[in-house]
Image (cartoon, one colour):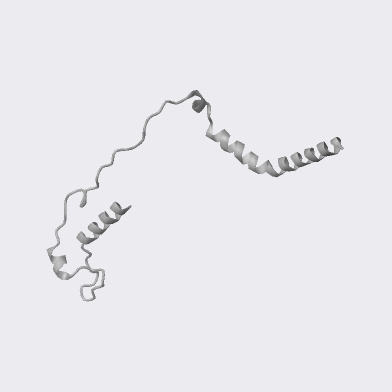
Length: 103
């Protein structure tokens, strides 16, 4: 994150903002001297971004992973979330019935 902030600060230092109205300069506009000295850069990048090697590593796919279906897993979890209260109520009734039978 700090590298990106530093890179943006460097970019802002090299940036020249031309004023919309030369008579009324704003605080963010560059001075008229800087504007007259400005040259257009024809390079693709003003500040080079360092290349970072990807950190992803390969792994062997196991048969269990091949059978796994994300769609079915999400569907199962949605169904469990929807019927959670009914299942809990049914379990409590079964426990009460078991307690009555033991007496």
